[in-house]
Image (cartoon, rainbow, N blue to C red; front, top):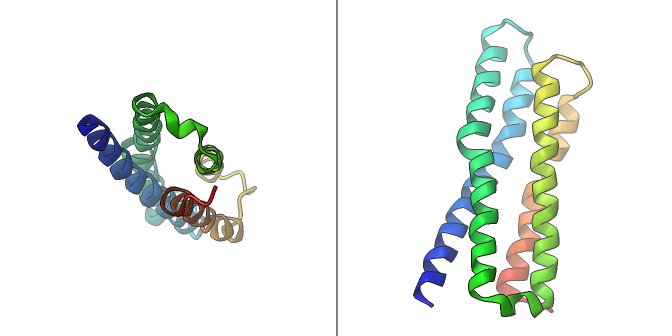
Length: 143
């Protein structure tokens, strides 16, 4: 089981990186929306969010899934437990939130005017709320 603990550790590290990225990405886009294309703040936030996506968000998401699947391969009994089903459903929603953030980010970059800062402020809380559910499922295992 020693390999399982190493895989689990890596999984947790990349969950932390993913969550940090999901919490900061909308803030970058909110700052970007407070300026106009060509202005230094707009371009800085556009570049910063692109780097965040390329270096942290997308790789972390892939590694979270990869290490998570590896843990299930090493311990398939987890799939027979109800809490794991709820956790996986919440992780699927977090993955969808990541995808949605990427779509919104492209719209902000393209200056379509269809994304409002208010929307991003509200969406900024969603990953944190979902993460609370995941943590409760993993630690408390209510089912």
